[in-house]
Length: 314
Image (cartoon, rainbow, N blue to C red):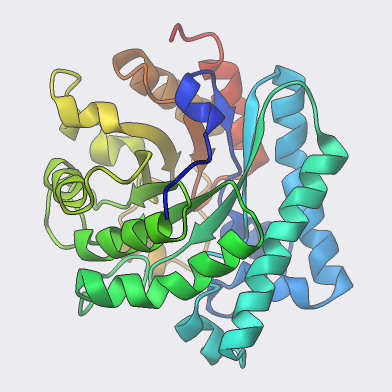
């Protein structure tokens, strides 16, 4: 199926998205998210209301600053294997993904303002977000993720975003599944403190591998779940591959994945410093225009990022 939807963020202009939804809901809101599954909150009114309040904070920042906003659905864990751990059948998982997209549309309709708002279906890794484990083949990844992506297509989401991809094979599978469903897709890789994927592959090689295997199917790439100091040195503006990176969702903390995994506390870093680091990245890479956060970030960080970056020349 041909991809026909046009993404406004590809035409330029700044777009914000949310921060670290799971860490915010757990550490700031005191909510229980078994297996980091934010979608599980959709099962009752109290959880749904908590999600609405969460997104409202970010929408208000975008509205105030007159910039675009990407409503990323709370479905990072809403795939079959993770759903099964929480007692969801495959049909249940399809339904909750459709419901999550419906909630994003409700928010867009309620808070629509002058700048574009994009509804994105969030896909997470089949395995751990920090460890690729036994990586699937691209074909296995396509078959696995097609179920969730199909639900997004049925719900008429504007796009798919694969967050915290640890390996190129899985990214290829997601991209192929999205293309077959007629959905634009963004691929967001995570990296370790050395700027390489958890598999040891460089970002440059991972992007080249996915583009080569999919005829450049991803609309763009992102980097998430890593601090800017972990990857900025690997991105030279002189290298063509960096132009494929249009989005950043960085961690607040400089800690490694292992340190974050082992820590009992939340390291929320310095929001003002993080905003400055984003500004520095945009000055070197002006094509980057999708800005959000990951672990440890909340609306304070996105506020500082917006303040620091909205006047950076494109």
